[in-house]
Amino acid sequence: MSLQDSNPPQNSGFSRRRLFGAVGAGAALVGAGAVGGYAAGSSSSDAVSDVVDFRGDHQAGIVTPAQDRMHFVAFDITTDSRDDFVALLREWTEMAERMVRGEETFPDGAIGAGEYKPPSDTGEALGLSASSLTLTIGFGPGLFDRFGLSEFRPASLADLQHFPADNLDARRSGGDLCIQACANDPQVAVHAIRNLARVGFGTVSVKWSQLGFGRTSSTSTTQATPRNLFGFKDGTANLKAEDPAMLDEHVWVSPTDDQEWMGGGSYLVARRIRMLIESWDRTVLNEQERVIGRSKGSGAPMGLKDEFDPLDLDSKGPKGLLIDEAAHVRLASKEELGGIQILRRGYNFTDGSDGFGHLDAGLFFIAYCRDPLTQFVPMQLALARKDLLNEYIQHVGSAVFACPPGLGESDYWGSTLFG
Ligand SMILES: C=CC1=C(C)c2cc3[nH]c(cc4nc(cc5[nH]c(cc1n2)c(C)c5CCC(=O)O)C(CCC(=O)O)=C4C)c(C)c3C=C
Ligand SMILES: [Fe+2]
Image (cartoon, protein in one colour):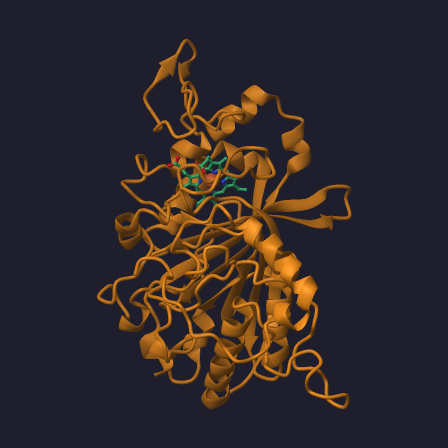
């Protein structure tokens, strides 16, 4: 199974849609329409379903066609008890599997536990469809300082080095574990993270979180390439779900790479990148295209016509190289980096303004790779040293997580690590 193609058994609890009858049916249709273009095999066998399979060889939410919305959270661990932590992972897995199916977090849900108990689901997703929700867990470096796990720490799992011009905010960086929630309805993604955080109280605490809208990558050939907040198509030259050999080479960890428990997993690198949109917006089109190395309208490499024409890094016009020697796409390309590639899965964000009259907006960059030290680090080093884009961006948050493999029928999140 290269995509998440196992079908979980139906659970006996309430579907959010069944509970609310007619409203639910309407929401289901909206959801189905929203996923009409999804690749067969990325969702369950129901052709109009907007449920993404939770179990499979790899966690959902990595090569799953990128949904429109994201809520990402990083947690600190606040317990010294391994048993309590594992119990939370087991409980989270059950909750996650239910929410991904469009069900409430627990069978008694928002109103079924009686008048004299706090509801066991917060309720804001009642009537909403599954919305292609995926929940993806990752473990940060700090987890391996606890619970006798040091011998299982992957050699590549460490806080990333400082890159030139980094301006990292510790309050938006790091974390002992993370959960990436992606969905086509923002309320469904927020509901999932909120309920997982609620149940984690006393065992984990939220360190930082990020909301994202407008995916800035395509992870499937079935998707049109979206645009980032600089107005350029983003994700054209990304790795795609339909190329399993490339994913095996660049995204999925092999059990023989380092730690066996990570076989089938992947490393997630998150970078909160502020985009200085006011100065970008005052920059002429010609210069914007020189910075990126692609044309703004079509997304084609400079001098070519079609978005998917391969980069020709040597082609010259009357004024020299068509793709500038410091253009973003040149420096990030596999041609310049000795074949290195990553899977990009980021989202736009705007978090109000910064108090100085500028929007606090940018790209919440997420990359999945087989080894952050030999893939993300050299790529980011090349960009940080020379990229023309650096005049318009600033990296303000950073984190790295080891995402374990997908779940078999009786697995829970982290079972390959905790046993
Ligand atoms: C370390 C990796 C990367 C960071 C950080 C990054 C930030 C970043 N990128 C854009 C906009 C675009 N990037 C594009 C291509 C592209 N970017 C990376 C890597 C990082 N980007 C790669 C590997 C590539 C593909 C290179 C290639 O082989 O062609 C593009 C072009 C369209 C595309 O192919 O996706 C744009 C546009 C921004 C605005 C940004 C930080 C805010
Ligand atoms: Fe990029």
